[in-house]
Amino acid sequence: MDDRYRLVVTDLVRAQAPVVMGVLNVTPDSFSDGGRYADLDAAVAHGVRLRAEGAALIDVGGESTRPGADRVDPATEAARVLPVIRELAAAGVAVSIDTSRASVAEAALTAGATVVNDVSGGLADPDMARVVRDAGCPWVLMHWRGHSRGMRELATYTDVVADVRAELGRRVDEALAAGVAADRIIVDPGLGFAKTAAHNWELSARLPELVALGFPLLFGASRKSYLGRLLADADGEPRPTADREAATAATSLLAVAAGAWGVRVHDVRGTADALAVWQATGRPRLVAEPAGHRAGHDGTEPGGAGVPVVGAAGPAGRQESEPAW
Image (cartoon, rainbow, N blue to C red; front, side, top):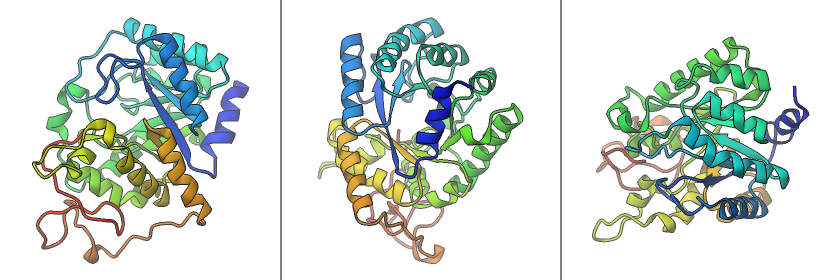
């Protein structure tokens, strides 16, 4: 195994401190920052800045996974990400590649990436397990039910936490069966991917049940629209994307306090500052309330007006029935 993968496993996957993954989208159509970093120099400068602000990993993506997004061909995706990865790796920045394509992942690892962040959990490309196994690199397996254009119709669960846990467990079993080492596996509940806002809140509230899978858990709620709707103004207008950073830091902190290994965010400084305060106060952990005293499986207060709970004992927010990405 390449020494750089051994180091990233030792220094990051087994890290005791929470890991902050900084988002770097080099796409024209991502929901939050599409087009801002399409230029190579701008992308590299932003990645270096995110590291300076506290990101342990820079997650470079060349294909938008927002709902309704069209797929790009592998050559286009690779052309977007590879130059950025090469430059960042040459500057000593640890990089993860955000892709569901084995060919792009393989090229990205050759270019200097050290982690594969696969939103499909290995389902989109059956060759991904081979690429990860042969490289020996860490692999983020996200909960996924289908590509962006079809995910809205797939947000149906009996119990979203139990169902996500079971489906993630199957992805882990498949990875292990393919020869991927257990200490290379990271899981991600996939907030916003085939999930309604109520599902997202319920996953957040019951995160320890997913942490109990026994693998490092990556949590990504950054700037997502369910946060924007929670913070809507008096006229019901969602909070603009760029103004959701405080909510992102809050939900990221709650996730880490519930046992998450790392958080994936756009605004690294705000989240890193919040986590520094958490560590300085002794790394307190959330303790789940008994089921009868908190939100039900639908993410609403029992007997209430349909208000989901943010954390194990967190503040109440608005319920959304439509998909929230």
